[in-house]
Length: 452
Image (tube, rainbow, N blue to C red; front, top):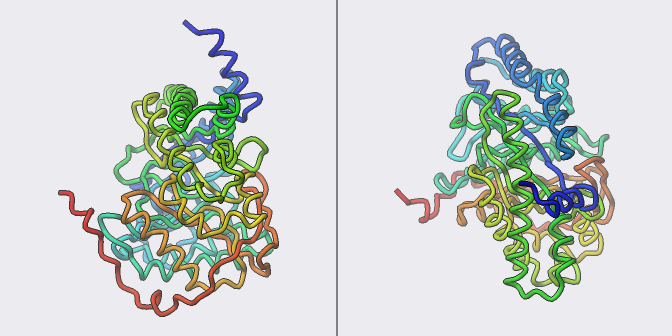
């Protein structure tokens, strides 16, 4: 039986506290689309995506209308395209990006992820060509997102790939400089990338996943902040318990949407990602949750401890609400997508070094950070290496999504619009790591990788 209080509470969460389903993402395997003829392969890719996802947007819209639950994004994730490119004897890998873009436009999704390569232990056939094509692919497409996994706890860190990605990030920003360098905002570099992540730009459909599935990403930082604001005087244990209870309620809504979308699309339900995903909207900020715990501003001393508490409590509460939790799950800290973090970055309280410390306890890593346009590829590579090292040693997912603001310096602003938001260009330590980056090779896996 439904409880009237629970119903009214949920309505308040949706109307006043920005509760929503951030994304319903359909994962589609393209392994059966492999062909040595790239044009034939691209045709198969387009046909399969359209066939599998033609009803995705209408079904999500019907669920929104029936249950009154906002579903902000409808997305698709596909098999890492480098695996398909391996069979094609051509360097024009960008044709796959064009096929993905056509398919995304046809079915009406917001983004399609999977223009990806997994190179944590080295480059296989297709990987190198795909990575080199990323700047052009993200320039000529609007909906395509790219990712590269350059390290893992089991494999170590591929420093040749790290060096390469510093250059690729810079080139991607340069090619889209006339659009506030938007291309770099659609490119993420991972360590320990999950195969079932529904969030962009890092979503891809892993080889261990079924042919097709539905993954759901929930949100709700505004709900957590509102709950804390109404419960003054709690000690730290009480704060953790309150966040757990709130995360449970948020996740139950995500589980409902996942089950309904799965049933209506006749596709297996995959996972519910518990991540608190902020937006630039007022009242929808992870930074404001940390401040509600007692910080004057995000970035102050104590921020990492507050974030660790939040991340752990969200996972503990959410895992009780869903039998299949996956993806990234926890709290995101994308600077340009979080109103509180944008303000903290503008004031200088939140700096990249503090963000790096926070990534040791959050869901992902250095996400959506604008850096000066003259930052060298070697410095970008070194930031990627630092973040990958945190993920590798701590057996967690970390990622880097940096936007070199071409032609801009510290204090200038970039604006992407929508959920990607915008924000100030942040200071970067420019001391050269060039000799280290150009050594190449592979950082060995840590001792904790030997678990067999």
